[in-house]
Length: 229
Ligand SMILES: Nc1nc2c(ncn2[C@@H]2O[C@H](COP(=O)(O)OP(=O)(O)OP(=O)(O)O)[C@@H](O)[C@H]2O)c(=O)[nH]1
Ligand SMILES: [Mg+2]
Image (cartoon, rainbow, N blue to C red; front, side, top):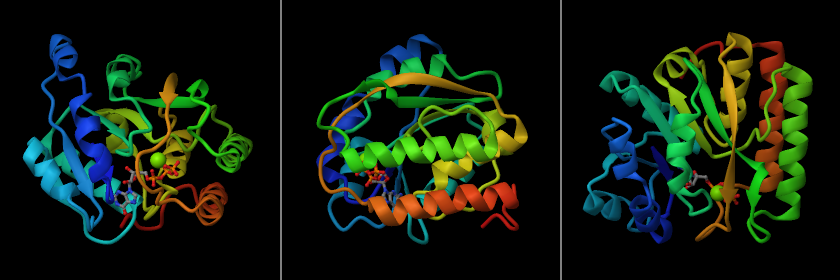
């Protein structure tokens, strides 16, 4: 599953690097689903040309889009789901390693901070923010996580069925983690490569960092959303 907002510059390359053959050798048949948040560029056209399934999300934000993608996955009855940002920062070749690392009824999280973080990939503000938010998450919720804001996750169906989420924007990863903490969903950490993005960032470091911290605090007080939207 690839969440997109104006990612025409990266989508073709990301798609072509998905290791469909290697996954086939492991017994998987694969579908590529693009969840689009209302791109103004040619992202949707490119996704259709490539033969991806396209979900045009309602509402705005990566969190809203991912939750719609999760819902579709559960309806379709598929077994495992891998989600990665579609901006060229994550390496689709590493999907096999992620899938191999999914614990039973659990989740594998790609770990940029103890992996191969390329020198120009993350600004120092974002590096500090990622470290602080990861530290805050563990301090509040107690479950080990190495890279809270990673955009590369691999889920078993059993884990996705249990996640309880209502995030709209970039707090979604933090909420997936808190849901794992409260429901004892096993997590493994997989060192991954992280490269400089293609195109413009949609995340505002300060604004989105603050809402991620707020989500971590809210879920310490109210472990599950009042109502899943
Ligand atoms: N479906 C959907 N995807 C979105 C939306 N906003 C951003 N995305 C996608 O979510 C992924 C992460 O967004 P980025 O802008 O890369 O945010 P980031 O990775 O946290 O920030 P950078 O480190 O600056 O790249 C990208 O693939 C975006 O295209 C949205 O509203 N809906
Ligand atoms: Mg990114």
